[in-house]
Amino acid sequence: MFWLFIFLLLLCIVIPILYYSTGAKNAKRGKRALAVNLISFFVIAAVTSFFIFSGRVYAAEEAAAVSDLAKAAAFIGAALATGLCCVGTGIAVGSAATAAIGAISENEKIMGKALIFVAMAEGIAIYGLLISFMILGRV
Image (cartoon, rainbow, N blue to C red; front, side, top):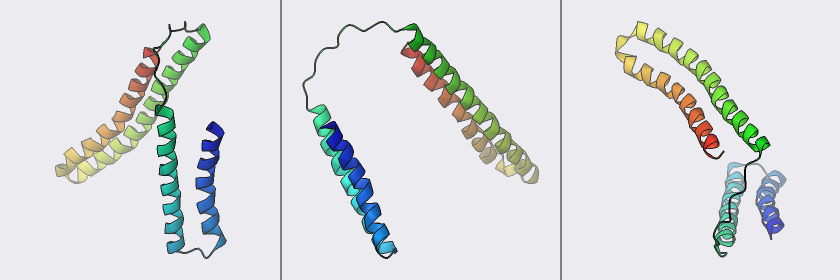
């Protein structure tokens, strides 16, 4: 059953591509191919979710002990999530803050808008920290 769904998903991608690439490439043909792709994808997703959630529900068994390798991988994943998000934040804040300072020196009335863009860039680090907390919560 699993392979049937995989096959159907691949088919809903391949058929619109073949339809579009075999004929004259115009906007009408592209819209039809996109519509076929979207409709078939959502139909397959609905049928798949029906089969996933239609089974019986059983109580969970006793949780297995987490191995040392899994704990090490979780710590490395949490460190990478936080570290890479902080590096990305540093790059984004560096660019946004430089532009904000230049814009504020031209016109002081746009300080609020400039600070919003800097704060949005700093949100990336918070997302990385939340992901690392979620990873470490499972260990």
